[in-house]
Each structure stands twice: as C-alpha cells, then as structure tokens.
Length: 167
Image (tube, rainbow, N blue to C red; front, side):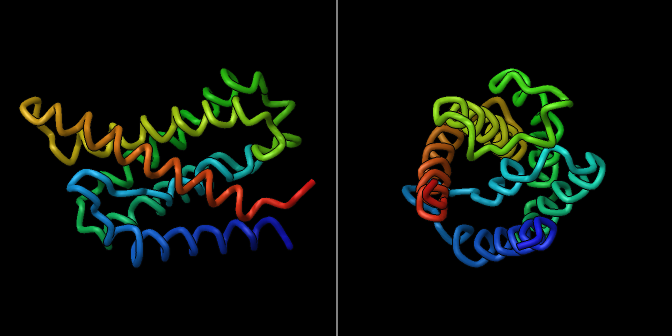
C-alpha cells in the first residue's frame, strides 16, 4: 500500500478511535488513554517537516473540537511533533542522512520503549497541565499524567504487537 494512503488512513482511523471510543473512557477518574499520538510516533522522518507539523496540529485541533478542550490537544500534539527529532537523535543516534532509512518498528524494543514513553509522558504532562492550569492541582496533574500514560502505553504496545507483521 502506498505510504501516503496508509498515513492518511491512519490519521482518520486515530481520530475516529479517539473520538468515538477512547474519549468515552474515564477509569477511576484519572485514566483516559490518548492513542491518537501514535500517529506522531509512526509518521516517517523523511517527509516534509512543515506538512508533518501541520498534520500534528490538525490532529490535535480535531481532537480538541470533539473534546471541547480549547486547544490543549493541538498544543501538546504539536509540541511532541516538534521535539520528536531531538529524541530520535538521542535514543536512536540517527541524523538527517539516516532519516530516509529509519523505521521505528525495526529498532530494538528498548530504544523504541524509551522513545515512546518519553514523548507520551511529555504529551500527557503538557495536556494535563493546561487542563488544570493551577499549581494547586499539581498532584492531579502528576497522577493524571502517570496513570493515563501507563494506560496509553499499554494500548499502544498491544496495538503494535497485534498489528505488526512477523519478520
């Protein structure tokens, strides 16, 4: 399948899953998975960076529209999309010449795990910080970040395990 079509379908699929299923989950008052950020992890590095940042912003904005959250998803998604290359350089030791050949699913699990966990925790921390927007609720920000990150990561790694091709 053409990669452009695949990522277009992934974009739409992530929005539909997030809006119609995952936004309706609120387990124990703290846990709400945000699987739509999977699009940020899987988008190829060698594509046009401006288009990628625009798609990340649009993804967050659409989630904001359906969640009535006022732009916090758009900002947090755009932020992790912007800093993604830094963590690719840190965790995978890849540079611009390596970007056309980089595939996240071909990297060792430990490096993938660190990369995905770091971006997920950053995304969730920014999201819940802006949602609470107060130092009085800082403990809620930390609790929401930890629990939602764990639940999001469990779903992400289960989904990648289920849908990955055997090599």
